[in-house]
Image (cartoon, rainbow, N blue to C red; front, side, top):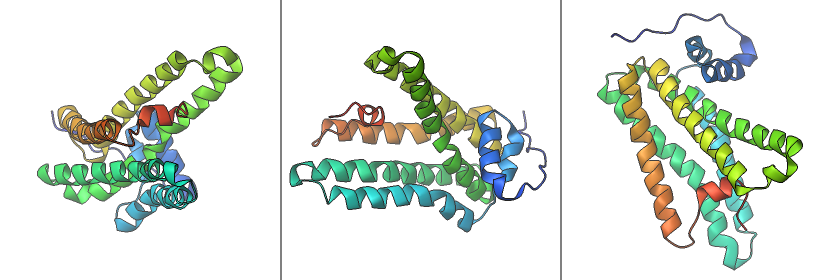
Length: 207
């Protein structure tokens, strides 16, 4: 089955990015048209991750020497994982002859990548209000994180399918190719000193 290009979407000014994230997060393909192609849009989408890494590195150097290495790892890992996924997706887009669509896809993917994290934070807040005791339990937090990860995988698949105009199977392959290297990197970081656990860190359970 030949993949379909998303239909046109009217201009929506400064709300283009939030609306695009909202639409794609709900499975609406026209949301991809809210994102601009080109290197400028891509660098703008990457800027928040770079800024957080720079701030994290600066703050890490203010920590005691015993904590400095862990602080540096925490600061740079999100950026490294993001860049790794961008490299993989660009190579795969080239293999599918979709290189011309890649910058807009990558821009949409970067902005949409914040959505599961925002949903996880809101879900934790709601859980804390409704069930204060349950919110502090590792089981509850683990369940929320697992749900957020499943949604992240679906969103990665969907944005790939829409943004690169691929079949569902091709988007699935992209999702696997992006997930495995990141998972392998985080596994290695957990095994080696300073034994950084990204899941525990994300849930705020680290000491």
